[in-house]
Image (cartoon, rainbow, N blue to C red; front, side):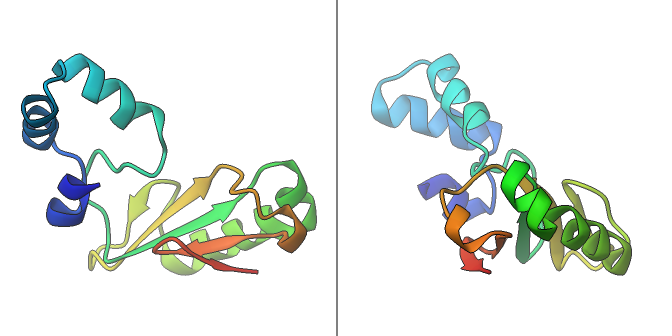
Length: 111
């Protein structure tokens, strides 16, 4: 979390720093950074917009929301607007199914 909060994403240099600091191999740190979708492995926009498109959210309108945002912003999944402000992505279930469909902006839920 520290590397991403400082750099905006988890860079190779950041993973090496974590490995050294935590006395882990870079392979172990890389495994964590690539497994969890909340860790960014490349620079992203100031606003990270995620739309849940898993089954329930998709049926409840998540796919339509994603398609509308994609068209409005002119970007696809995991792409950033030309001005560097917004990155759009599909997100996995965030255990908020009672509020489907779920949209997150910088990890804050909107339903």
